[in-house]
Length: 504
Length: 51
Image (tube, each protein chain N blue to C red):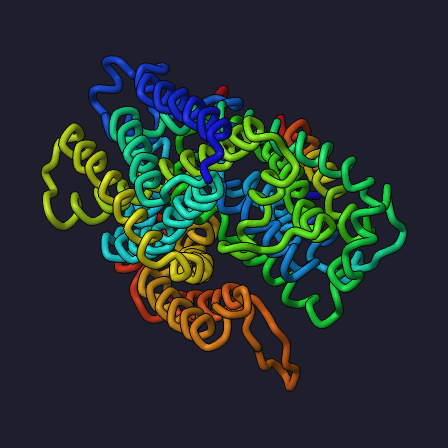
């Protein structure tokens, strides 16, 4: 059965998005200056986003449709441990406040487009940059696929054929991404986030009232799901800690940050972006609402419960509005992720190893086409193997965190050695992947860790990163001792470069 | 000062309990919401102090 009224609202809102996306290429376009550095224009919106646009873009980019579906699903199924999404998206912002302005400044001064560009110049090593680029690319791919999965869930609940809808959706995203680059998701994010905020606030107020208030809701929820049992303490805090470290290492997060116009914009956003966290908290509560409302997981399991909550409580046109909010919520991150992934390919592989003497226009064309290929790949991925996409996204968090020494530590510690970084990365990747295969993928990223005779469940990303860091420090110290100063890569970027210029 | 939220949230024994409730919401949950506001205040304060 097709929910026609819902579908009409849904389609209208999608057309609005397409129009905004296609027209957005004009928004504060660079003119003369833009012609010289087309890559920054297309891939970073000309680095001209102010506080408000950056807030919408980064918020729309990080709090994805899949997040809005998966977080309440986790709370619905596993209870309180699923709430780690809330503390992790809180503690990440003090970190953003301290680290990201420095990284932005270097990227701005040197015209870097991707996170791996930084690694290349900092360590004078295209190879290390390639390792980081591949890590970022591989961690991002399943994430894009899951955005498509979010769209799949809502269109299928509207009774529309899934494959055709997904192909149309991806064609729309590919079209405006190709044409407008990062400006498209930035401006669409304004629409997306308005829809999401309205939907969530309406759902929370209406459903809570219908169910008789929070008191009545939590009366229906087993006590075990309302509080964290002591045996999950370590799991909860390592998930919080590891996910917070990982979030702004993802290429799409860094792309959003690089697109902003000044250090101030980033620092202000560290105080403004938690508004999305508050919203995410409300969405997490929908997991409890679904329990209280007695929703039975259908074909999509717990991932279907929030959309089911919509169809159970609201009239069709409103369902269409809410579903459009989710689907457009998938479009924005999918577009940014495709741009970020494609830029990694273009800058750190194609330009480095295939064609070095490439013009900025040509380079941008490679990236434009690359973004379409990435999006098509993501759709095929999710149509063929949706459950693998979910699993690989969990792996992705463990992988991306291994780029921390090369990306962040390098901003603070001068004497890091490139080979020590590579060795640490290798060990972290290997041990992390092993931990995930053996136990982690089935346990939401947690695996048993034996330490000093104690055995506890901890997030694989955290302990594999500890091993990584240990090797980086020991290896760098050894290199410092045995290798002559000239052959190391210290201070490739002077510390002054991370500071804000006077009077800016 | 920016480390305060890390201390407040990374040690679950501080807040893994049901009581006291707020509007029927268990302590474990509303405590986390509260930290959204505290963190906003802290980062805003640091921003002002440095500017």
